[in-house]
Amino acid sequence: MSQKKALIVDDSTVTRLMIRKIILDNFPDWEILEASTADDAKTVVTEHRNIDFFSLDQNMPGTLSGLDLAEELRKSYKNTKMVLITANIQDAIKNRAKSIGIDFVEKPVTAEKIIPHLG
Amino acid sequence: MNSLTEIERDSLCELFNISLGAAAKLMGEMVSDEILLTVPNLKLITTDEAKKIEYLVDQDVCTIEQKFVGGIGDGSAFLLFHKSASLEIVKMMMKDYVALNEVSQFEKDALSEIGNIILNAILSNLAKLSDYKIETHVPEFFAGKYEDLPLGRNSKKDNSILLVFIDYKLKGKDIKGYIFFILNFDSIKNLSRVLIEKLK
Image (cartoon, each protein chain N blue to C red):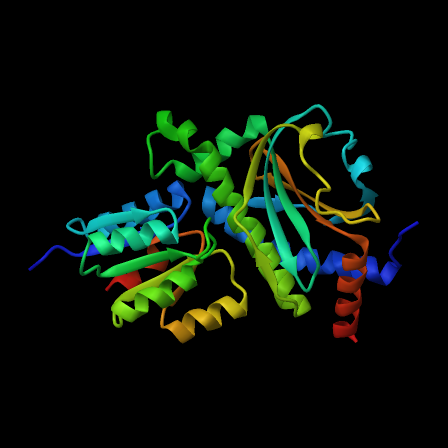
């Protein structure tokens, strides 16, 4: 069985570090990929196939938000687990996430909030 | 002279009070400690007056600024720490993730993320309570003397800004900080009118 891969997209190094540790504490054999912007994430996605989990920040530098990126990723990753991890808890954000089929997790990150989405 | 009526002031105070409860809970989660908040203290002052706040002038501070745009108006929210407290806060936040001797490398990034979470929580609650949609940008970090803080770049012609001061304190620790908002006077009036209308 091939090694599972998670891509963490967040402009905060600290949050990437936290999510990485939470995933590896629970799934030590996973490969963790990281990107700090949506554009960087698209480069990572072209270099690595078969990503099993996407953790996406909403507000990042650059032209694309986490939800914009999720919409693009959904074209190729129709059934892959994606989680929007954000401090922006407005209904407009939650509703758009729902329409794209991406789970919503409120920052700050904790294992309790993220692990159920990895299963 | 720009001023608020008693009911306008009261409605805004209550709005910030409710929003801060959620923010304090999140900050407590991040630093694994209880956050003590004061009742919001609303002041309508000018940028120049804000520069001369007695207990902040000449202080070394770190701030995270979250600019926002939307129905509420254009403005900024700031989370402010005294510089001496900032590394202690980052240590509390990062202790489970990196060795203590590595914490200082993450100071700017960690404080920016704390600011992002706290200020977005407050603004999201403001949006919910007022029915305005608010868009936020990536937060900006500042470290230096308080008087060099670029206050007021969002204030419009009337040069009136709302400073909503909220003192917060980590329980049992000598760590204190402030949150304040800058909005122009028209936006402040509009926001209070919306709130009063909702309360009727």
